[in-house]
Image 1 (spheres, one colour):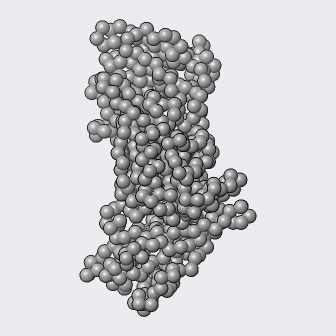
Image 2 (cartoon, rainbow, N blue to C red):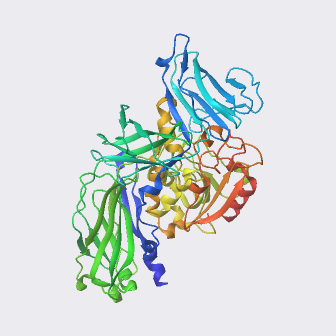
Image 3 (cartoon, one colour):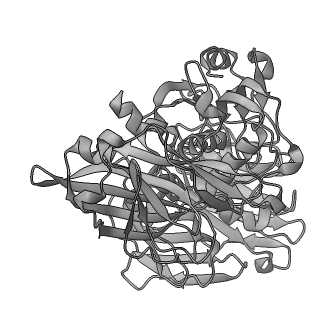
Length: 626
């Protein structure tokens, strides 16, 4: 029972400006045991592990390069590996191009020519037309597939009207390109370095990148000769789309080029935290830092360490959402439980994260805690009434015009990023249910969580069945804010399918392609590999244990080329559901309900949408808390 008391979060209030039609929201003081520190679960990720892997080349088509007949000939042969070759034509305007692909069969030296406006005449050649999952679902793009055994790939575009766009090529490369962002904190006026390497460790001949700033300006940067990394210095905060090109020579000394696409959020540096000041309380002490210069909300986190039997050891981990007033609350019973000497306490890995982008804007290795024995509360006099609430200012608007869903003890069906509506088959659910509705929206995990609070205000309690980003929003809500989730009764609190807990490579690709096609409802850095890892470093085991998750992928048929979406299949590692890779859908510390083939992320893909699985939905319905 004693440990259960320690794990109870402290109640704080997140105060929202009444003039904005908002209200006070209860904020949790998040506490995690030493085991979460020892396991590394709550440590900032190693940037080396958060890179993007690619075996494809995405390059831009400029209509100004067309000849007098409107033909763009890219002027060099693309090198084909041992497998099948796929070429996707992505014009900015529907039907603005005719794609032309030529190759030579290496067995009989017969030439293959495929036009996207003509019938297919060669055996083994196919053209599949698919949409971009984040774009206009009424638009489809031509994807040409050539069988293995081809050589001398030649690609051309015949312009029917002057329109730019991109071409995406899978050349069956004999190696993969891997690029990661070197810095944990990506801040204005501080260099950002991208480091590239090849999967077999071979040498990259040249590296260059195109950087698109938030204001739309572009910059071409090149690595020094012999270097495999390049850098740029962001001059403004916001989202940067970066495309890295790397060239290498294959075993036949032929030049091969691959690319990776990245979305990078850049933040302004935050006010330094300064030294820690100790404010004693009834059953806790407040660890107070210098105020920030603005009321912009951040997440503050720190490890507490102390000397146990002569050895510095972790005591607990603290975190909470803050405004300009930045502090953490330490229940001193954690110190007693660990057997730590109060005079040796210190904070380690103190960090400040932007609440929306999750970028760590400040990281401090360690700070002393000037606690004298007399400052610790007398445990025998501690009460169980809890601390008085404090106020935290929030400037994020929720959708006040939508109102709230009806009250009761409910199962809330939550859609994901940029969804047109509830993806679940409602008839598969029974009892008291409600559908969260925020169509065609792009929100950070935090803003998404606040909108869930807004729509569930009238509910006495609720559990969640979530698709895609809706799952991360629900987990974020449960971790950092009090809501009806904390009052739900039953078995499983948060159940999800198709949730990219560890991010998706499509976030970076959507940002690069968004120049011409739009990036759906907007760019979202919380769902990049880096943004997701930064966020997960703030989610303790106690929260993760409230999640039960499912992943799916396309049906893998023998001797067939399988996919959910042929375009995203070139950008993701198999198996995938057309939006997320199975490996990136894992949530360590939660309950993995397994992986099932034959279901894709959403409608319009080759296999049925994963939220329409009657069997899985019946299980979610039966086991849900409400």
